Amino acid sequence: NFPLDLAVVEVPSTNG
Image (tube, rainbow, N blue to C red; front, side, top):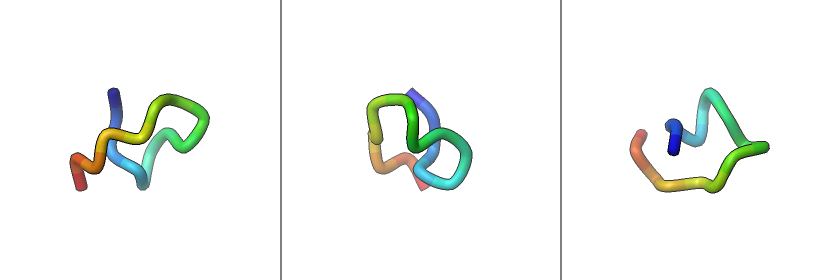
């Protein structure tokens, strides 16, 4: 999972 800033296409994990 990536930060919401980088990958919205992935599962948002609220990492920053």
